[in-house]
Image: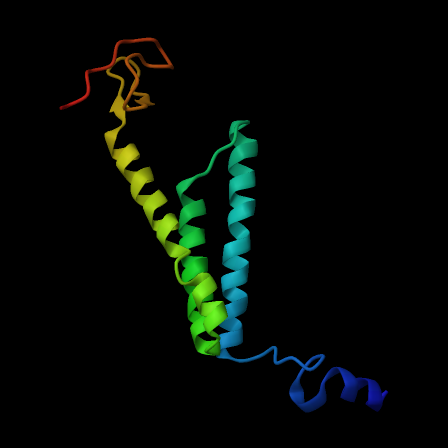
Length: 134
């Protein structure tokens, strides 16, 4: 039994790998956050019955990418750093686009529904929407 324990946990490592430590914890947290975005997107799509990418997907992507980048920097691995150095850019840009679109939405005077800024008529009640501000 002692030889099995020594093989699995030599020098406090599991299968020869260090599993504990601050930066390892950051790396695991980054993986959990980054992976959870797929569950969020899947749930949102199932709920609406159409492909949907909610803002939280982009927030999880951004936080996960920055944590993975910080982990890569802590490892001082240039290939790993470069592979993750620019991932945050499209996630940030998608958040900017999302919030600009959200702020530009029109509110239907007849039913209060929030409508696409390009829509001329409310998809909920059919009322004419105000013209976009120029």
